[in-house]
Image: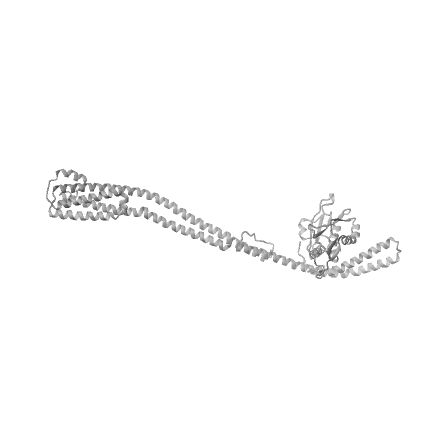
Length: 517
């Protein structure tokens, strides 16, 4: 997942958290307004209107029966019931008529106002509302008829309607107050629920913000810190440092590129160091060849003159012939060693494999006999003909064989195995000794130029061998030899080469550079 997608998801999550918090707050206010504030406002309004309607009924009753509306008295239902049987007939005065008509108008106005309040009808029910309207109409009609001269019966009917209306209003007020009390209890529960809900929402928003911080640290801050640490280590020369890559986003790709860059710089520096080492080796080789050739020429000349003075059947003549041949081979190797300081040019050609190996072994038999070390050659399905440059590959195999003879203890054997490779297109030449082997901490450096564990070694044999083998498109490796009693485990150097290089028509050119194996 790319860094852009991660940031989009993160921003989207934060936006959802903020929007959710705002929506929860708005919804909570809406619920409080709908379930608590608005009903209480309606209760106040309805109770005020019902109180006004009740007072208008008392005004009408006061006009119908003098003395009931005096200060300190109330023309309530009990008063109306007690006074009804003792009411004496009387005619309305003009003041009574005006008071009754004004009270009737005000009562009908209150009814029209209450009729527009849906909350009241929902609370008291349609039947109670219709009964209230009917009683207001009956009270208004009876009082209006009596004020118009209809007689005592209309007065009694109007008073009864006032009484019933008064009782109905008071019972309605009690119901509304009871509902208000329940609403208060419900509002307390609602507030607690809303408080818990809002706390949960804001806690979720806070956790989302905390998650955003954690993800930012994981996606950006920590990888950038790793990049800075790697840049500091690489700038200090530690090119082996690698950044642990944990993601596939842009920063993860940058980490991989930094690791690749560090590896490339490390490889280039190693190659530069190796080139400098090989340049120094070249200078040293040229001095050695120059200083060794003159004594070799003297040795060969002396051996040749001495051989000429001996009869053909003399044993000394055979030894002198071996000396001359060895000096000639050594001279040829010196020439090739001198050529190895120049860019390596291979001339592969079809070469019989086993005779070539035996020719290299033959030149090392005197040194092996001098150490009482035997040398044996075995074949295992090896190809008869391979395409190599025997002149250069002689040096590679000779360096490995010389090391094996030098490491082998007296009385042991150095075994050469010529076999088919892991694929039909490859073959292997293995050289095994039963010496002390190569220590674990030095195995990574045995192919480095100038690295040696011998007191008088130069450290260039295996380095040049690796260079030549690689120029052939092959590989040289090292491993422990199987245990062989008290003689130690020893070492096995395995040279794996292609049977056919495919470059027999054109020279194969390789630079004098070396990469540690």
